Length: 258
Length: 248
Image (cartoon, rainbow over all chains, first blue to last red; front, side):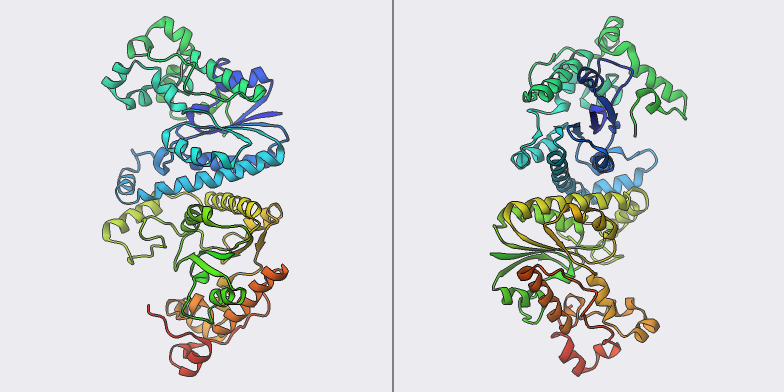
């Protein structure tokens, strides 16, 4: 059996970090992990990679999908495509709405393969946009496991509200050094909930049981905290390495396949 | 029971033209038609409209869907059709589309995946409501996809042949060789891009499929090679094979 992972940074597989939620879930369930999750991945990437991989699914495999924000321009590099992106956002934004339709259609594909192969499938919305779409369609897919709540909220709620208010949400998006955008403690809790769902069909609740309201920039620079909660600064090292080496291929380090 | 139609100009319903194929089919089966087929439509509009309307589709209804050209994009909510060149867009919108095409657009493989997912959605509803569903792939864009997934979607009636080809083959080969199909298509005054004879044949094939499950095969029986440039000027040709000239 295999644990298949699709999505964006929220579900990226860090093979070298045993307490990140994907690795921990795979280890606990004694499953081989095959991950197609990629940071800054738009929904298009998730949909396409799922379609590519689904022919290789076996009976009773486990599939976990995190749904990125429903925007086409999510991974467009504005540095090199400034004008096209600016024009897109100004005149073609309706095109983003079509992503909702693509997500609904995608779910029908996920559903049919889940039924056909008796998969255990979990679909996790990261943000409000995909949650709204999925909520309105959940009853169509009784075999798929949907959580209560949104993945990104755990990440955001780890911060002290006053700190978040001061720096804005974008601050931690750009500077975040937490693998999957959560600390070790909450990564373990996410993993526990996945395992309970897979083994006992317990509903995944992303709104309770997490450590929240404790994080600020001071704590993120605390050596003890870095050691205990930020995997000894693993992500900081990666970021530095990336900045110093233009040929750096981080997939080798993270262990994911793309 | 009712007939639901989603797609492009080949499937557009002309209720005031009793000889047009959707209307002929409707009358023969005594079914009301609800159509979301539009000229220059995009697959995205078809996907969107299907999801929007699917909750109104009832048990045993008939569903007719066409998959149009893959590269058409739906950028503006009030204009759910292909934007070609300078038509239908202002300068800024045109520039935005130029940049999108040049720098941002995704590959066609992805849109094949979208179409596949859509067909799973359609198959699911067909099964749930015991619909009779016919899929017209009007061009060649989805041939490989259909070949791959047709066995997985046994409840969908995929048409053999392409309406886009039937439309082209109505022209006399010699004329096409000298003027090219494009020349005629730009001046096309045929409803659904078909002459009357082919409307009748197409309707018969669709009805036969609905009643007897006979596979719809557009590669045989259709009238070919009868149109030339007289179609625009000769009243007799116009009377026999073309409909009353629609307003363009």
